[in-house]
Length: 165
Image 1 (tube, one colour):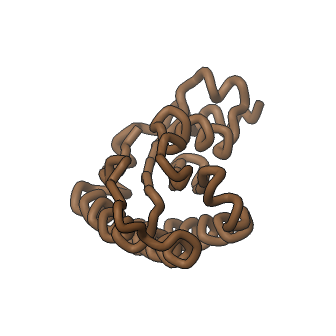
Image 2 (cartoon, helix red, strand yellow; image 1 turned 90 degrees about the horizontal axis):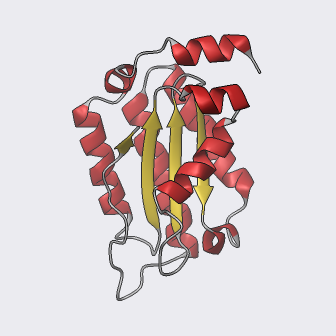
Image 3 (cartoon, helix red, strand yellow; image 1 turned 135 degrees about the horizontal axis):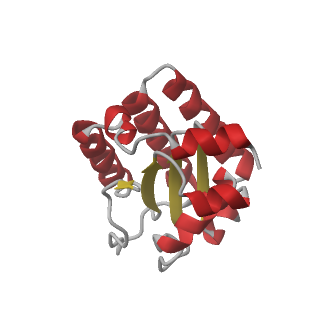
């Protein structure tokens, strides 16, 4: 257990999410997701969290483990073609994880997701939250459009609104 990490999480207020992602930015992300999903057969979810709760902190839960947990909790896995993608932003640890369903992971390597995450983290370090998020959604859109073109029947299976935890 990293004591510094625990202290940062315990004493970080939830409102830092609104500072990084105010309502207009969340709306822009929602619109980008809606536009993206018209270009491919994937389903995107965007989740942002200020800090972890004490239980996961004491267990030493990693950002990746939290992202996988949310992938399940937000039912991103529950799409007809196994084509869900979760973008998880953890503000206190300054980490981003992308978790893709098995249908997508069969064609897109984890290294590609990791590269998108690192570019987002770079933009976020420069306080360019909206630019970083929208650029990442654009990159994900291009990957999914290449590997999963839209079907004639392409329902919107997951909400487009970002989730603030």
